[in-house]
Image 1 (spheres, helix red, strand yellow):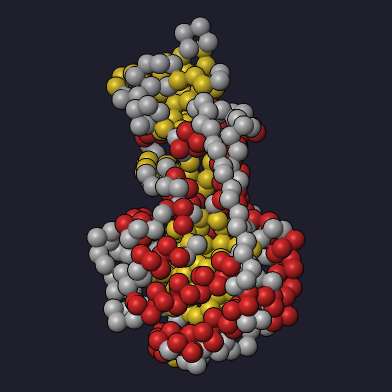
Image 2 (cartoon, helix red, strand yellow):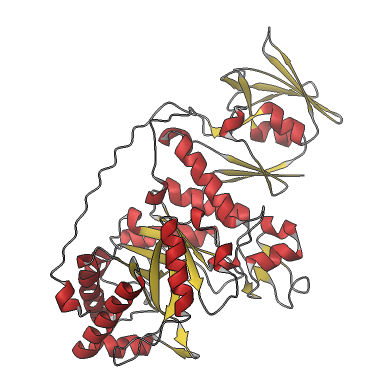
Length: 466
């Protein structure tokens, strides 16, 4: 159907969500967050993987980006890759209330960069209209929910035609009630203006429903470090994009080995909790990637900054077992829904020897959190039992005695003094009782037991190691 005819259709929808903050660390059923508001997006490269569609954890996603469709300079779209798979994917996804977008573009086609193709098409009025018409036909034919524009990347002399294409394409899609997203480059600095990203105008950004930052493939030892994710979010916000329309991209592969996350975990489950594997172990090259703790930290950071969501490239590279990235993210979002906004913003996460020490809300054993002094407190008993320590609590004086091997630690509720093998040490916080559960200062206690404690502020995580 020609897009000129489709313009006669108009669909509008307004949704008002009102959230109410409640008491600290309290479960509150009145404080509900629609998990669909925080996008969890998975790219699905149709021809790059042989994973059955049934293996997709669609119940843990909000969007699938099906790729990659390729344009021509004349504006035509090349045939949809594996169309039967796309049809089946749309059917399965819509049953789970998951949106499916067609991703158009990518870095190259048949080893030839696609940027010149986009430039030639967008610069020509007839070719551009042909492209838009073909896109609308594909959206209608496959009952898609939107389109993802992956032009890598508009430059100084092509920013204007990128803007024209985005404005015209978004108008056509919005008439149908469909969405338009765009994949954009990461940024190494908030104040830098990389050629590959500053050429997207504010008008183009306003016309997009959301952008997806490819905060990976950095030319460094770590191709997707935390600081790069932080700077990329801040950069695009500074360009005028509301945080709620910014989706942070996360990699499920390593560089320079290109090993998939699932294959690293298959080689050794411990690799799920690391970010680096040396050359010669699972590959001839080093594997720099994001393990579960790093991906968790980045997601917490994105949620806390009120970003629009996270995106994984490529979702086929996840596992379907206890080390699944999507399952981990789903647990995190479930916790977010159960807690008040203030409670979640003060929640902390604990890792001991890189393994998560989980405190589930349904266990009612207390939750690690940041106190009024900015210090992390952790529920006592579960933490000490996890490392083989013993705990004695004397109710009358509210005195806690912790023993592990040759170390004895004594502290009192609401006292800043801790005694380590009878030697007093002053702390800048104190142990407290919350709902009859004892919470202790994590750094003071664990360092007194000989552990190394590292605080990751972006993800509000404590990494404890022997």
